[in-house]
Image 1 (cartoon, rainbow, N blue to C red):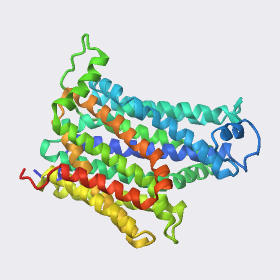
Image 2: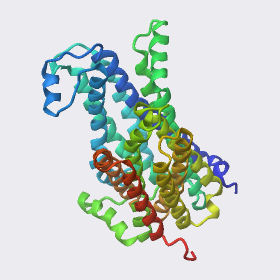
Image 3: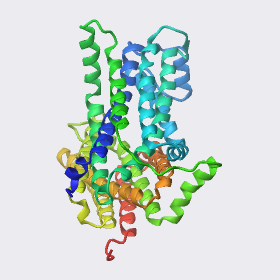
Image 4: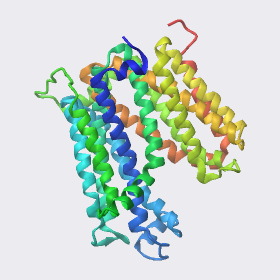
Length: 440
């Protein structure tokens, strides 16, 4: 049987699921870009006025909207919040339903309904009442974004739970590596090319007499994802519902963590990893500020290098990861992250060194994330996978959110270097707790 990427891509049913993931992931990234595009094109067309209800509301939170860029950032933050809230609170509940319902149907319905919601976006451009100095359409977009995110919470655990049903155990590591690489690739492509693609559709289709062509992108991507997944032949064990109690099923998902130490350990590793990566999002601004050829506004360059390193690391794990014990891979990943964080503090201001270390840090993240995800899939009972993956979504989204709030404050108070060392010590401690020197 072929191994690595060639082996998993040779599985026709998994290939359909993977293509569905590609289109769905791109749509998720294009969605955020489209929202910012609409804000800039339709609701923030000039320097904001000094007064008004919106200015008063911003002042109450000590926020400045003196420039057009600041107002776009403020309104885009509303979109981010609407997208994040369901991810933080609904994961476990959605995971329960993902176990109750057929997973293929859950994934198809999620993408199809998201395509339908995206078709409602043009209606938000119609004239109507204003609240807090903004058109009703902006507030409607917040509602649409919230609903899109709710549907994503159902799609994610169903998708993760479907992978072990379509892939033999010996190929799970390669399958998760491909998924991780695809996710990072979609993030880079979606955010980097989203705006040019939207402008091409807007102005290219207008030349053919089709107005608002930018709105065609999301329904197309979500629709293609639904079509790819609908063709999958997925055999599931029948789920007994009967008098099943929703709260009892949620508790069953937590019970898996108590009964399966390997699942619990892998989940904690992912929470730690996402916390470290979220802190890096904030620290990247300070790191970029110290580089004269970048500056604080170009911090995305550092994040892109981390994403590139993660994608390359994922491909390497797919091809060679089966040769190594997963606990040692996780320890190597945590050690690589710790080493990179320490050296990032020492090489502040050096462009090439900082870019290289960000890429190395991404490789370390892949060495940790992919074996951990594979362990959760293998060691979680099939009937419990949706619940566990829903809980995972809850915890990882919280892990992504809290450091974004705290890291900037801590850096302002203690400086960049102590924070980098503290994060490195945390990663190194976790690596040592894995006891990689023991025979497996």
